[in-house]
Amino acid sequence: MNVWGEVINNLLWSLLGLVLGYFLASVRYTRNEGMTMSAPGESPAKKKTWLGQNVLGVVVIVMAILTVSMLSIEGIRTRNQAQCQAKYNTAFTETLTKRNSFNVQTDEIRRQREDIDQQRDALLDVALNRALKGENNVIPPLAAQRAELNRQEDVLIAQAKKLEAEKAKYKYPKIPDCK
Image (cartoon, rainbow, N blue to C red; front, side, top):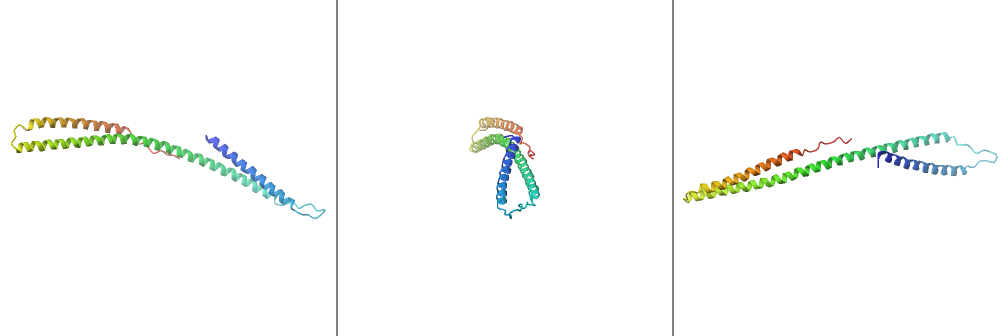
């Protein structure tokens, strides 16, 4: 519902309440009038408070209109603030989800690099054990395997840098002024 629709809806309900209140008050007033007794030949005493009741009625009506107007305006403001906050939350969640997917991929690359480091350490242990046993020509075959591990690690490092660059594109949204 748009803003004016809400205002008109609230005003109509307020008007209905005012009309209902008026009719209930007039029924009560006429019932009390009928109970007033006067001596034969005397005119019934007119109430002196008629002007005061009208002034009080106008004040109540004005207060009712002001109250309904303020409630309508505050309701509209609150709804607009909630919509603004919802838009920010959606944008923040989308950014967070995208950045998290990059973090998951980066963590996988980190685990693969740790595996390569362990394989490199294992190669070094094998080379040292063979050298201590007196084997000759141990280093060239292991050097080729080590070079392959280094190449794999360089590929992983390049992938990680690419992921970090893509992740940097997804900035967190600025906090809006939802007033």
